[in-house]
Image 1 (cartoon, rainbow, N blue to C red):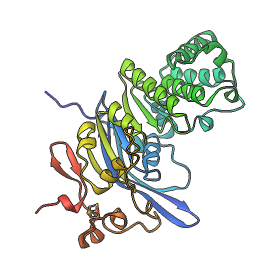
Image 2 (cartoon, rainbow, N blue to C red):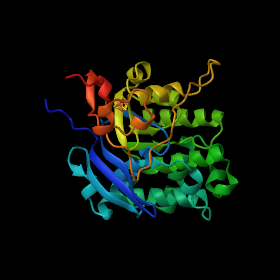
Image 3 (cartoon, rainbow, N blue to C red):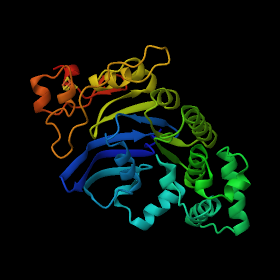
Image 4 (spheres, protein in one colour):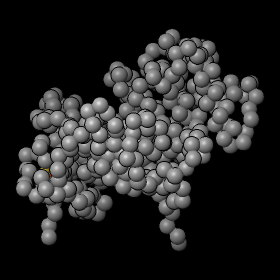
Length: 330
Ligand code: SF4
């Protein structure tokens, strides 16, 4: 029987940004895959390149992005990097959708929620050759607001973004993403700036919707417990490179890379033990990233080879891959 190709197969992606300080070499040969119906997570400190990676997939990088290369193979046949903008728009309108970090910037302050939502539904429908009447657009918009568990969806439909709380705005953004997410939903820090109790509600909502609609998911979150609970596999991204990946349970139970261990140890605990010692130092300067292993200036185990050569990603046990010279045996 023929093996089904992954829904998304991202190969060797590089992205830099042109800035007044010089060229920031952010993504440095990132590869990962996502199978149909699978839920994967990306973890790592802010500034590690997670959002840039997602924007590369959707081809919505800012204009100062340079040196963009690699492949993003969708459904085993289309390379999204090679599509025209017109073709890419269709993918964004009826295939892959993204929930952005900040609901305030994702919503237009001068239009009512209903107008913004109907616009997305309209173009998502047109991408499939379906022209909906205004009445149908409104019905679908209200249904999406209901699905995002917004109380009084009719009132929300007629509200401006500033009339809603932060949690409600994020639910509206989820409703918008659902209007076009037919296969893959990318949730990029969907709970940033929200109260802890609301964060949990939003993550549960996403989890329920995804299960109901049988969507594939990429979840980026600093809430490590949620990533463990909500995903099948996890990738750890550090300074624009994948440094470890495994099934979610395995990765959180048995982290191997010194960075992953420190990241998990520094997560707040509910047991009253407080937080671990944290990770010393800062993310590297992307204008002159460290040679060899990009983590070497912050690592407690640095060896001479770490400064000279980038460690390859090797499979230490079935499905558990790590890029660190400590595990390289020859
Ligand atoms: S390759 Fe070397 S510097 Fe990098 S994490 Fe491993 S031991 Fe530390």
